[in-house]
Length: 142
Length: 279
Image 1: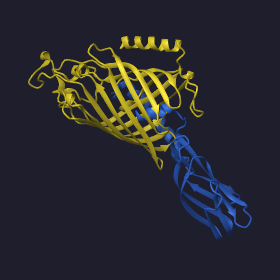
Image 2: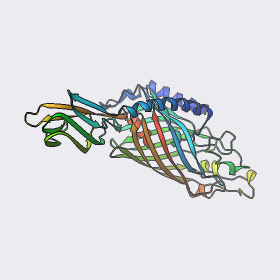
Image 3: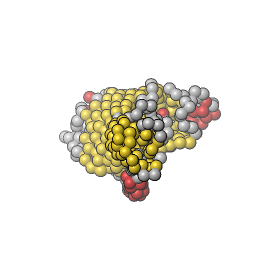
């Protein structure tokens, strides 16, 4: 069994430094705000990571919105036609939901009366293993 | 080892000459990557606990850095499974591949050396074997067949008759593995059975008159089947980072665990690792 050899240790040490620097990028690039003028729809997190390509990704989404004027608004997801939730005479709201998707999903805040999109945001889906490989399956198993 | 490589190159050349190469398989899945040049590499840092099979072996717990990789080029491949494999990387030639079957000629280490100064062992697991004659690594060349039952499970068989050791018979191993997803966590379980003849097991676990002592009385090992079970989980932390953990039990055959060189019936290893996926 392969245990620590000096060469391997040196390689991994170097890799670790690169990895740590790389991890910072992931940690801090976590949320974005999509705005239309001063109307905002913020989703957290804005990226969902699953292990294998095309696997369903599960995430607990927290959506916060704010508009300049109170009105009747509805929150929509690109994955379904019916609204996730509607608010009456409000200019802000919070909605949380466990969400499952295998591709990038879009969220819209719309005026209830005419379906006008007031603000939007997106949930990106990414994978650790970006290729579909049979060899990867057996390599992980055996 | 060189003898095995000679066999391997001869067989690989023959299969290429006969046109038995991976591209000969006509039914390649549409989402399968081009197999002509591909690979992946991961670096992991693990905290591992290991209970060795050898007598008087200390219980090991500590950090382990390792690099795991797989590289394929025109059917040729080399792979190192890090903690989950033995010392030498496995290498081979994939001469047939379709969506449900894959056949390789494969060279790998099936048993580590014993009592050799540079034995590739975990910590000081062989410190209790002082006085035992050295046993060499068993590198094997054989045929490896993999059957993909569906997208999440596979069956693999290795029949490895060629060894660079003088005292050996065919080594046969069978694995079944399945993965499944629960939320973003991916679980896997594998079961394995490996048969070794009395010639092979006696070479490693028998005690001859020339090395017998009070601690190691004369022992003749018979053939046996080693059983294994592993359960593991992988959880994606970020696009390049994975948290992994697994536990593996290896149930030794009576011919092995009755050997004076061996203490427990069951060898076990557990680890929790942070993995960085380079590509």
